[in-house]
Image (tube, rainbow, N blue to C red):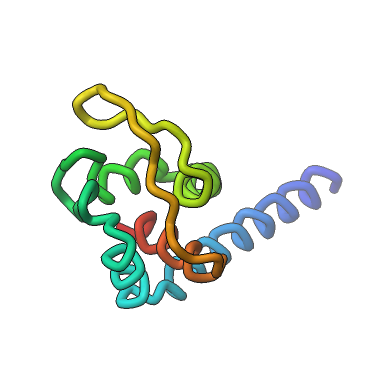
Amino acid sequence: MKFSFVRSSLLAATAAVFMLSTAAVAAVDEDAAKSLAKKNDCLKCHAIDKTKKGPSYKKIAAKYKGKEAEGEQKMIKNMTTGPKVKLEDGSEEDHKIIDTKDQAEIKNLVYWILSL
């Protein structure tokens, strides 16, 4: 009896996490994300599917596949605090700080990248 309860609780929790992650991806405003990336010159160092100075957005999404919460946290930190980041050629530089304080805009950009 106990096992059945634990198992059903675990299944319900797993389903809830799946629905939340699916909702986050479904709620992405792709046009707004691309606009914010363009406005902040993110595409100077990143491309959707090609390596530039920084990794492609698809490479970033693949890195955090199954670890989206970690990816979200790391990308928000990079976008808002400007830490030193390692570039594709092995050199390092300060990551550009995104020019917005709107957390919803930043998260939309992050979710868009993770959805690629």
